[in-house]
Length: 293
Ligand code: ADP
Ligand code: BMX
Image (cartoon, rainbow, N blue to C red; front, side, top):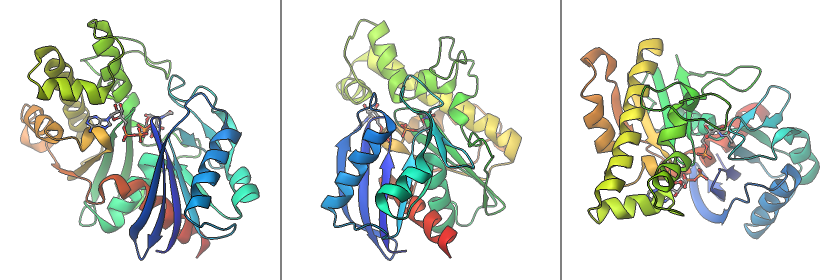
């Protein structure tokens, strides 16, 4: 597992050089969410260049949004990536970077965790990212669940009894609209804490501010209910949590506490992604190398 990887999320874009499955060098840049797909590829290409990537070197690219079986890239949450409206990502990556495989970011992370991390002993496993949005990847019977339209695993768009507002997907009252980073920031704004991003809400909660604590509690409660629902459908035994919110201090404990409300059968093991922030990167390269072999 040696080569390069990129991970374009709704907040940040990461690239990495990976040797024998380990990230040995990493660069981060903020994602320009409004940028068109050609500009997103140019940003990835420029970051990869700084890591010494040359055209044709093994490369896996993980992106927020769905990637269909023709390699076209579409935002599901149009509030996050408004200019990603069905773009031939796979073709463009081959054109500009020589060789690459692209897939959804949470699917990539689930693939990596299923192979090497939290899901390696599981027969029904979910990876959840709580980050800009709430994303997911499902590994059932050692196979990453996929669908031709690339939507399989988009668990953040499930309805939540804790949410009632609009979501950038066009659905109403989704888990993502209340639990993801954008949802957390929107809740802060609605509570007249204008311009507060999710990271600042966590800082305010750590500082003892009740309004911030309540917003985080709501997010964790909605994610716990989602885990119970997914467990009813898929018989999950293990769930790994990633993303900057999922990995933030205290968040998984809050989610576990909320999960205690569920009957035992609906309460899988809930742990951090073993590969942490590297899971989408390692998974994207692993998916590429598997496709090439
Ligand atoms: P991406 O969604 O681009 O993959 P992240 O996983 O970093 O990126 O998630 C971004 C979200 O996490 C943003 O809403 C940001 O405010 C929030 N965030 C970043 N760092 C922290 C932190 N240390 N604690 C809590 N939230 C954080
Ligand atoms: C959203 C959706 C998913 C993505 C997930 C996590 C878009 C743009 N994104 O549910 O495709 O996997 O967020 O992405 O439709 P992140 O931006 O939080 O890392």
